[in-house]
Image (cartoon, rainbow, N blue to C red; front, side):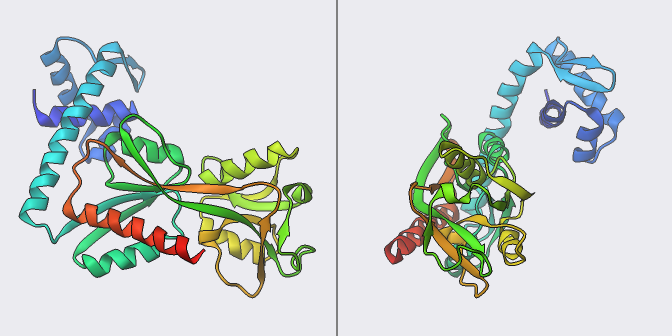
Length: 294
């Protein structure tokens, strides 16, 4: 059994489509199919059920996938550990976030400590983040909501109140606070379902008897303020994402404790480099500092 066979098997198992897997691996379909066939011959059983051009993992394939993922995961951790020992001042931190508003401040502070460490950051939905965490493909995630899984460490680093952003022309602009029930007839702009803040506010609005009318749903939280300013709708904005803006007013919510938890997450078995450990310290200290300001 060859390492290449395992890598090809994982790609096909995850997509269950030879064409897509070949494209992601930058190899020909025929080469990929032959490699998978050799692996099946080595094991003595088929790993997939063939349905036209689609492949579907059978029971043998599902069981083997779990073992193959663990084997490749451990090998990758070994590579990372050796790289860290041989070149501790260089390398790349793999990060994923569902909340990005605090990330520029955190990365700026970390860069002062480790100027030669590079970053690769992905903005993801909660489920996408869970997948990467379970595969051990990221060093850390900054997530709201927290994710509780057996193989994931979840450290709550900040409790972030949710505010209501309204344009200066809005009927509520001179108020400092508002009840959720008063917002029942409003139009909202927000992120899509699957993002923590959206799921949280929908649940809280439902508890007081209404479903928010979203006239815009996107995957770029930073765009929401400009949409509020343009009077497209009002928006639920975490306090960490609220910025001073002459055309926007922020209102506190009176009758509900609408607060999102921000968590730092990592896989229990993933090797944590020295740089990654320092990054974790920077994250914790940053949120401690803004908690004192609040």
